[in-house]
Amino acid sequence: MDQSWSLRTLSLPVRIGLLGIVLVVWMGHAASLLHMYWHYENRDERAGFTIDDVRAAYHGIDAPAAMKTALEANHPAGLAQPTRDALLAWLKGDKLAENYDNLDLGENSPAELIANNCNSCHARKAAKEKGAGIALEAWEDVRKVAFSRQINPVPIKVLAISTHTHALALAALSGVVIALAMCSTFARSGGRVVPLLITCNGLGLAIDIASWWLARLETPFVFTIVLGGAMYNLSLALLTVLPTVDLLRGKARGG
Image (cartoon, rainbow, N blue to C red; front, side):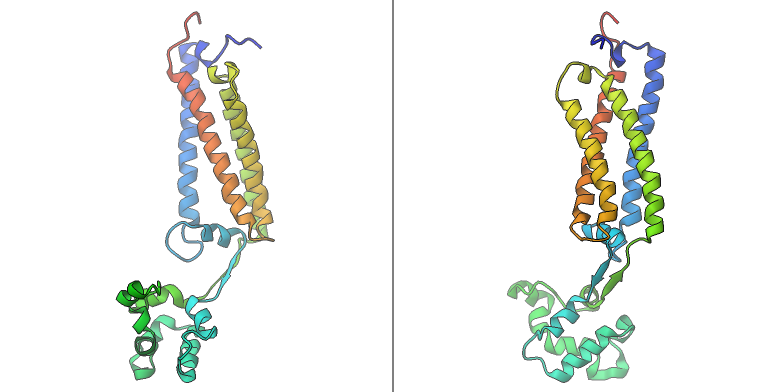
């Protein structure tokens, strides 16, 4: 291989054309990250992008309400059984928000029962002072722990279509970026950085997409989706930097 040849030795018109292609890759990469955030941000039915959004999409979530779990576990220990039963019946119903402070229920409304039996420890100030952690002073606090979540993963046919689209497109994109990176002076100098980035890129993509399917069976593969996706996206960005730098630099001396 001619070690003296690189992207820098190409003529200016060719470098400009290739730079346009690289810039499109940058724009597409940024757009894909935004799309991922917007597409999955509320998948777990809660604001903000977290690992639960990934879990909901690929494995599903079956999480009972935290308050329901606590009441069924006999917390608080001294709570009268009729009060416990009334709160559990409310939590198992389908009108949590409507019945929270329902005036027709009077002293038996969930808001009153919580205020009289829970807020000695779970009022906002008391929760901080006593280390209870969870505040139950107002509906804004209660709703965070009152709703159970049962979210099914994406249908298998949708996952197959997504795999078909992403696997072929991302593999082709990686091929283009890797080819350009291999034509850069950074690769032709014989260093180990570019081969390492290529390894991370290919391995990360394979781990990411394979884990989409494996996560349907076992929850731990949700974390390998994140790991593989991070490896792929970071290595792809760094690989794209290499030809970008070469194409923006002046023509190499003697070229």
